Image (tube, rainbow, N blue to C red):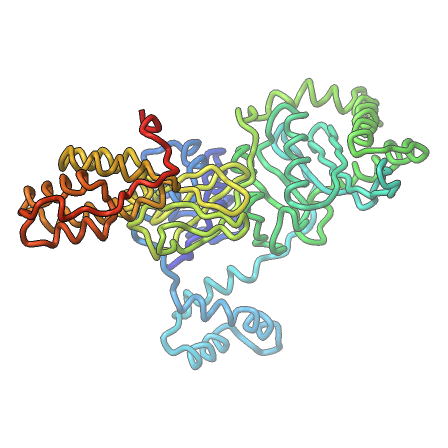
Length: 515
């Protein structure tokens, strides 16, 4: 049975679940993918001699190369066709007198080369997932963290404008101990959401095994009861902290009932107590929230002889996984084509980054953070640059072909060293040329022309040397004059006949310039 290649961020989630001891069926259910796909990846994992904790730290293109060494997965066209028909088949099956066999026969009329009845039934059963009744949930210490945004907003006054700014309140709850964390953020963007979540994990001093967010856009791209599509940045965050993300189902608040209940309690124990307070910055507001939520966590719970904080510190904190040594840095992705100048143009920053010239005109994958730009081709890292904002070029010499290196390396010393390989007379001529009053770059073409003339007379080095000496005697180093000397068939004529106006200008740097 053919399967689609899953994105690498989801594969890392699969690996983390496998490391935690999850069964293939459980992993498939949690990630919303086919069990056969999970079986395939687990089987490939056996042939990879790398620890799971090291695999999840690999960049996505390199990880993909470990599992698909040149043989990308393919999609069975029969499955794609049936997949499009499944909603119609499910609807028709609910009608009176309609059987699966009848629907299969109709399917074969449309797709003569389609699945046989057994495979048809298998895919149909996968679609018709049984509805299960609600159950009483039991929670394990350190296993889950529920997160959500409160429906009601708080506000602070901007000191400079006097404007009243409304802000969102992030709420997180460990369901085992009921321990709660809150933080105000400007928006519900992915960046603000992950920043608040990172602050929460640092406050807790560890990481739970599973994160249960709502289907907010900051975490979930596509809401679905069985196969929600996570934001890639959210998955990268979870992989960095070694957390599995299982979003709550749409319109199923009981999936995260603990945090929903905490939001209601926070309205009375935090919002209401701060109703007459005025804050003049987001920092001031968060300081007040921190104080009130501490009171909430230290308050004895009803029908319990302990507080949320006591329960968390005594029975749960030790089961949280250690925090990683580094903070999370958001990674974004792009696919670009290498230009003829062996650079990619990063339009977001209006900047060019070099790539080895052998990759010109190839499509490359780019992963970039706030500080770094990594460029991949065929699952291999081919270039790394510090990120630069603003127009310009970030070029590494080793990425250029020999011609381009020559062009970029040019300077007076470069030409003088090159002349030493030919003759001392040419060295003197090059030094005199750069004594001119104009910038050195003006004389590069003249020097290139002299070396070109030398190449034309390589089989007659004495001829070129004689021309150099004549030019030195008459103090004329113009390319046109030197060319006329070299192109003469004989240079036996007295040098007096080659007298010309001096080349060196009056306004010169002087002989001490290159001492």
